[in-house]
Amino acid sequence: MRHLQALGYHGGMACSLPLRLAALGALLLLPGCLAKTAVDIVTLPVKVVGKGVSAALPSQKKRDQKRGRALRKYEECLGKEERKAAKDHRPVDQARCGEAP
Image (cartoon, rainbow, N blue to C red):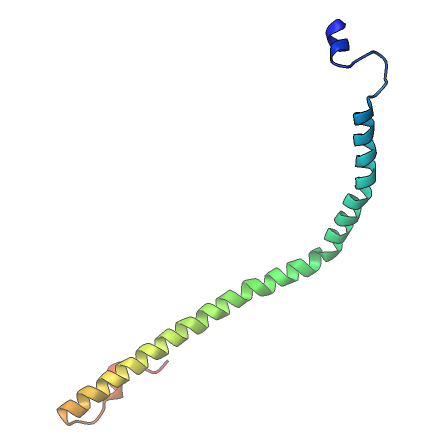
């Protein structure tokens, strides 16, 4: 029992002052936690819809980038074909570059 008294335990259900203050602080903070939880629940549908839109946008962006690369590659091929045709004194053959994207 002496080792418990050395640690501050004097028997019974009495609490020390720091423990009481901690409990009071927890009680004061609890309504804030409940309010935050309520806000999280209310805003959840908005966040879910926002994530769905965000998930759709990158795929559209990737398609646009892919089409842009294909178009630049096609135009580069046409430029090379025009230079070769001018050098060989022949008409430009666009079929050598494939179909336009």
